[in-house]
Length: 366
Image 1: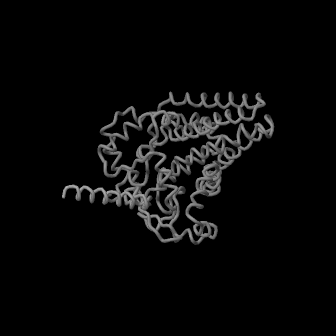
Image 2 (image 1 turned 135 degrees about the vertical axis):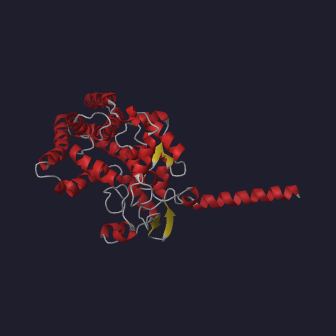
Image 3 (image 1 turned 90 degrees about the vertical axis):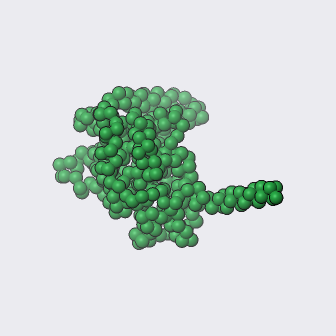
């Protein structure tokens, strides 16, 4: 892997290879919002109407999909990939983020400005993981990293069920002082609005039905969203320069699943052109791989999650992750992270088998 390049170096070259309409909003994508809302309403009605728990559970999965779909759509809308109208963008983005309980104005500050502007910067990216030196200064984090790696990984994946919403409320505390005094009431209102909406739903459907109408779908939506978000950057190196081919990862799924998740896995493409509609992301991906094949990071979604399970979440330096209980180092993507590093036992077995096969071939030739 070569040294860091700035985002501008990619966009300048790519714009010469891509049609101009790629950089315009795609209003037709807004049709997903009423579809997801209708799916929620239909499944919620079925949950309330049926006495059968298994059927309630099945319908709850339908709502869970609607919730995560609305989250992915909110991400598109608030980047301006669906509409340029600021009022429509704010209203529809607010509605689409109600299931995950995130405020639209906060998201634009936290995600669009801070995360995209400082991706994988060790201090300035609000979504980046910490380095060993800073982590051990916090007692809870220090205690957590003394636990067995498998236990930590289990907790990490368990935390996916609530982390997106929790992290959003942590970002509210962090960034609220950065807003102008006249903006803060809107930011606070958008944070409170989802709570009021779901309290109203609780009163309307009752506690048991609320578990199936909101709680289980919310857990499912958080988990699916975080299964993408956690793999977007946490296997990549830390960068001082905003280099999306170095600090981001595209994860691939079967085409039908990429369609159901609105193309959210095309994350390098999103960081190169944040306002680009996912409708065109596959074209940008092909061009990126053609122009910078040695820099492009892509993994199957399942393998990225497996790497996430097998590697620690602390950086020893900009290029390496460290397991604090043993001191073992793991390279990051582009800097040595591969199957042989993540699965050393498997690699040794494969190497031993190759040697045995070569020996048998050599003996046979003699």
